[in-house]
Length: 600
Ligand SMILES: Cc1cc2nc3c(=O)[nH]c(=O)nc-3n(C[C@H](O)[C@H](O)[C@H](O)COP(=O)(O)OP(=O)(O)OC[C@H]3O[C@@H](n4cnc5c(N)ncnc54)[C@H](O)[C@@H]3O)c2cc1C
Image (spheres, rainbow, N blue to C red):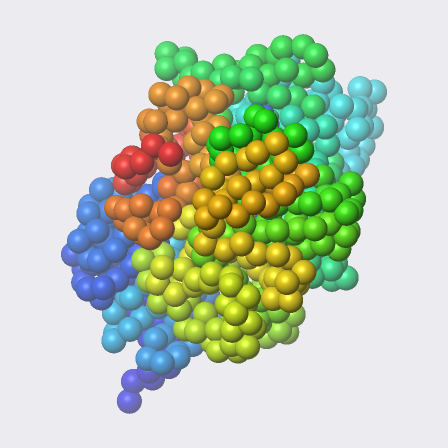
């Protein structure tokens, strides 16, 4: 009898797939896929981030890419056991193409490929200097012209941008710019990170005083240097700042702090950017071949306009400008908005003795932090996951292996469980008048984040203050106008105020392209972020991947990087490889460059 173990099933189908692909047999390969299949490729086959849905899309991609990509046989990773659950067999594999080595994940259903993930890991001949390729450091022997590591490093820092030009300029030295800079450094791609704040980590330090990361430590590691085992679960914002500063130094990044990018323009003739920055009071013009905007999706404040803002005598701040509660003890504060920042700010103000009112216009998704950690993240990112043998790399790949089109189907049952577990809590919140939602289709927080990047609060305590009335709530309410000393709502309610905080979120990242490059280029590349799910704030048509992030855009040599720490860690790998390949002059035939349906 044939051995039908999961490993054998994976071996059999991978063997046939690898053979068909290596032999250029497109139909033979397509035949191995289920009709409702998904192939998510991160750079290895498409030089893009692309999910192919259904056999026709797989066929079209292979017809276009196979001649250039020239894949070799797929080999099951024997270190990772194949498994079978509920009729789905899954396994891991290594593969090669003409220019790269890759790693992948497969799910088989009814004998055919249901989901396939292929990711590029390294470029042949341009591997990172790690493990057996680790640099020696010391130069043994003797030489009269010997320069120490410190001398060489100082010379590089002195000359790059003045005597020599970087290949890449990254605008924005938050965690995104820093993680990408670290990967490019390991790939030997000359890079300068431009940051208007003085020190790495300042983008976190400057946020409101009470902020701690909302995501847990297992989710937050940076590339190369994971947080130590005694690191707190939720890192206080100044501690993240210090970690980023340390990281920037030890990863030897060329980081220009206190330097603002003023403008950038692409010269089609030379294929070069002209990036004007102001450093130490002087204008410097950089001429990189590639420009990355890592200016933050939580960086461009959305401040609503209301009549009367000009006559209001108190203070008005966007949440990103709010310094924290200390100066507001005994003062009356109105916070407009009801998502993460609004809750954190209201709670801290209440703790400091302010009289706080939260104005909620539309519903918010709330999930309790400990419940989210357990049900939402626990299998992949937790001590429990580590104890079960999970690694950060594997967790990132499992997460990436779920196609966006069906991801909500996996999320909905988790959020149903959360709703059930915390029923009393939600009942009390609604009794207090708070308007709740679970996302348009009940799929909860991650889908809201991926689709629109807003609309939720991970509860770490503020909800109890709303429930017991310590934080006053005006829900279903919209602002009509401000007077000299109050916020007036459309229902006529007058909320006397000394301070108004607009916790009203942030604009699309392509607004930065409009500011720094031109509105025409911003329109050409279109909206950043979102999947085209046709849910609130994520208009269709369906895109299948996050718009414009970490992949080629409609503007040659312009890239966007950002997201939370998990995305920054994982997707910086693919962006750095795309940039390195271009620097080395490798062929990078991009498949399926996205169409632009929305400008911002
Ligand atoms: C309240 C709050 C809580 C959050 N909690 C978490 C969390 O727990 N985990 C998580 O992963 N994410 C969290 N986020 C999201 C967080 O904002 C992003 O993960 C993170 O900031 C993204 O990093 P970034 O490097 O892409 O952007 P930023 O950190 O915003 O960095 C962008 C940088 O670009 C610089 N810049 C902009 N324009 C220019 C210019 N013209 N010249 C030079 N420099 C420029 C800015 O000064 C800034 O330092 C939170 C966000 C908020 C607002």
